[in-house]
Each structure stands twice: as structure tokens, then as C-alpha cells.
Image 1 (cartoon, rainbow, N blue to C red):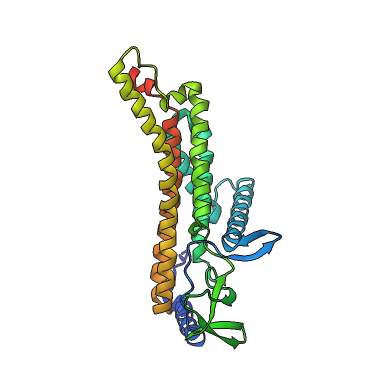
Image 2 (image 1 turned 180 degrees about the vertical axis):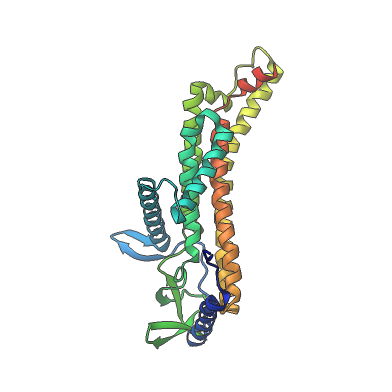
Length: 315
């Protein structure tokens, strides 16, 4: 009879126990220090007059990870085995779910909208999950703390200079900071999303799409309703700008708050409790990526449908 392979807790539990022991030893040798929490990204070096920030490093890392994922999936798709397995199968399953959602909502505009939905979701997903990588937000340059900011003492170890919880005049500037905690990234992504929504709307409806925001056709035919339609158009224009704010601060606020939570828990209970919150941030990062991409898809789908279409259906 063929034997089935099972996950044996009696053997694999030693790996879990080893990580707990190593975490306890590391917390004793290098006590965790609450980093200096700042809203703007920190500059780690200059290229001429241009300051390179730690979130730019995270952006490069996220782009490289996405390229590697694309190459892995492409290699699996070109292989003789037509059934994707493992990591490539998981990525294909995610893209298939995204495609089905787009097809259900956008219909014949799926080929146009799907690339934006998939790209934004994958980019934000990788950017959010970089905070789960060991060393992100915790390995960096030791610099003097700003005036009025709390500082810590520095000690020498076989790994180099490290900070201690004792009071001093130094702080840590991380080399890599989670990309989504930089408001510049979230605002830029929101601008791209809203701008391409207008492009898709113009492509679908032509100049008639602009009548959604500047509707003066009913001033003389229906004066009262014409004024109402004009006011609704102004509100539609305002709502497009408000989408930029909601997109930007929703993603930024959730991920930045999650990073602060990990900092605090990692400082208070450094051995085991942070693992629970790492799993929480895993799901929060995934949910925020899907929400950002799905809202973009929905707004693009709505832009392909004019108000006249609804009126004709009602008639």
C-alpha cells in the first residue's frame, strides 16, 4: 500500500522551539529599542542635490520582487507541464480571481481595465508585505537624534554598533522603510489611478464623457432641472478630487498604523507576541491591496458608462 506523507508535529516542532529560543537569546543580547517614528521618509544618502530616501530603496526592492515573480510565472507558463503548481499556481489563481471580478463588473472593457487592477494589486501587495521581512525598519544608520527627540546610547558588539534602551543622543534611521508608509507613494498611485480612470472614460464615451462634469445642455430646455444637472456635474468633479484623498490616506493610514503597532509590540514583548501581530499585518496588507485595486477597477468600469445609458434603460 502507498503511504501518505503527513506533517509530523513531533519532528517539526523543534524548528518552532528553536526559533523561540533564538528570539529569546537575541532579545537578551540586543534589547529592542523603539525607533524614532516619523511621518516623512528619512534621507539615507544624497546623489548631488537629490536625497535618496529609505522608501525609495523599498520601492526598488518591490519592483525587483515583482520582476522575479513575473519571470517565475512566465517560466512556468512556458513549461511542458500545463498545470501550474506551487508559487506560480498561487499567483495564477490570484490573477484569475482578479480577472473574473473585472469581467463581471466591466464586461467588454475587461481587456482594458484588468491590467490596471492586476498591476496595482500586485504592487501594493508586495509593498505592504515588505514590512514582514526581517531587517526592514530595524537595520539602518545610527545618527544623532534631533533636538527634542528621545535618544539612546550606543554599544559595540560583534555585529557592530547597536542601540540600547539606555538614554543617549543617538537614533536609528532605517535603510529600508515600508513603501506604503510614505505619503508620496500613495498619492502618486492615487493620481495614476484617477487619471487613467478619466482616460478610460474618454476612450469609451469620447467627448461626451466630459458632460458628466460640465452639464449645461438642459439650461434652456429644462431650466430648473438644468441647474440641478449642472450642480450634480460640479459635485462629480469634486468627487474625483476627493477620491485622490481617500485613496491616499486610506492606504497610508492603515499601513503606517500597522508599522507603529509592530514597533510598540516588538519593544514591549519582543519574543513571541509580535508574531501574532505580524500575521494580522499580513492580512491587513492583503486586504488594503485588494481594496485599492478593486476600487480602481470599479471607478474605471463606471467611467465607461454614461448617464444617458441609464436614462435609456429606464425609458
